[in-house]
Amino acid sequence: MGDEQMQTAIQLKQLFVTRSEYGADKGQLKGKVEFAGPHGNVELPLDEDTSREIVAICAGAIVRASQQVAQELTADVLTADVLTAETPDLIA
Image (cartoon, rainbow, N blue to C red; front, side, top):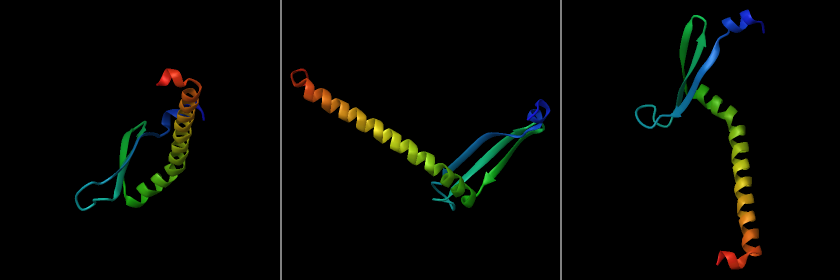
């Protein structure tokens, strides 16, 4: 993409999705997306269906991050168990 195209490109500025906690929309996902362009910013509301699609796209990354954290915690526990077994006099 050339410099001229980069200057006229619309860029994502913010993406926000949340679950409504009260009111008529309680329990529903709602959000907004904001783009910045050469002629200013534009903000668009996200309805329940679109918000769910965005969360679904993120689900795989959430699972992978959770698995990584679980592996790191397990490694920490195993390391602590090994150190305790190797140095019982220092732990007591």
